[in-house]
Amino acid sequence: MSQFALPLGQAGAGRPSRIVIGPSNRQALEALQVPATWPFRTAILCAPARAGKSLIARWFAQQNLGDSLDDADRMDETDLFHRWNRAQEEGRPLLLTVSEGGWDIALPDLRSRLGAALHLEIVAPDDAMVAELVESLAIERGLALAEGALAYLSPRVERSYAAIERVVAAIDRISLERKQPATLSIWRDALESVSGAAQPRLL
Image (tube, rainbow, N blue to C red; front, top):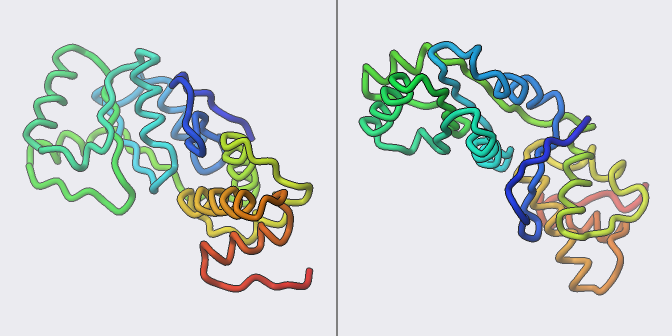
């Protein structure tokens, strides 16, 4: 497992400035670094909430690998079609990021052109990646986790990037409220506050 540094300046509390690389996103990130290989110099990156697609789009543009349009599925389709045509005329790679759940393109010309693009996807993280995400988010917050936190949290956190962020934020909040280090009782209460399900009290 590794991390992909994004040159985006200082991140805010709990806002990641790095993308943790694992099986769920490695293939997509590797493909984004070689835009010359994309069909029609166009790639569409689909990712679940909080998986880092906006950070990736900004990184791609800042590295001058090409142009990026974040949340392309929310754009006016005619405007997007013009942007695609402009990128083709200029011979410049174009990265579009879209949300998980499918993209129903109504404009036939746009649909046919984007259908030929390279389609990339970020999927849910595995256990090892969950642990590294928890650690990375805690570091971003300046949150010190007691020994054993990753082993305890990783199998219990919902396999979604948004849920992992919520759990780390809850640990930070509860630790500050109680003025206590982030140890087992706080990890357990944070999981309960996020999931609504009681965690076993005996380990």
